[in-house]
Image 1 (tube, protein in one colour):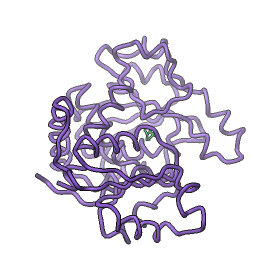
Image 2: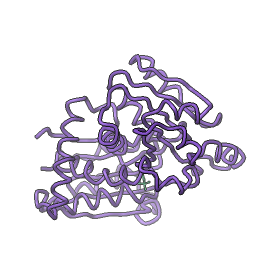
Image 3: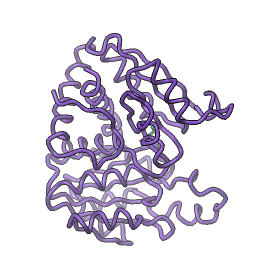
Length: 307
Ligand code: CP
């Protein structure tokens, strides 16, 4: 079994490790079907979430529970942990590390997981750091593409929506850049276009990408349309900019009509109004299957870190 320690950014994974995670995730699906395992008996996972979450926190907690481990948790940590009294992230991590074997951290500041890893003395998993990265989401996204399309090479993917603030798309770009003949189409409102650091990374790694305006045109060529939410919480008082960006690109029946039969729509969720609910009934709507895959991928990560 390959061992992992920290999970901090998508760039840390090589192709062999990704394959090992996916193979373990497939085993984990069997484990769930057979009512779990005790492999992580007596191990403790701490989930420290300074930003809201449904999928990431609960799928990690379910993953740990299904593997026989225990969970200690604080949601809304900014309000309900001693951060509210002025404790630094570093001090909180030093203390929580004494109570647990792995820390899963979501934080509103980019780089927070690296700061945590520097002082923890136990493995730290980045569960989303501001507009930085969300590497475990990118792994489950990649796992979903492999399952839905049957390959990771020669993929045309349209990344749509808030590409400036979307940590999931940033991490996914780093992972997809490892595969041959991937073509990325960036479809974003003017105010939230993909940042230069990712574009420079893709150029350095000879990954083909194009910034385009016409979602319907791109939908005809895409194997995957990866829609994202315009992240209102990152706009602060720039409500005008948010309103301009919101609603520009919606995946609805007209977009589905352009897509190929084998293609899929993905979304890290939560969605607001950027995918019309009438799309949910289309078999190509893969976003709830994608969220479900998060359980298996996170079980695989915990097993590889702790077992
Ligand atoms: N995709 C994702 O990170 O969802 P949550 O914010 O609900 O964890």
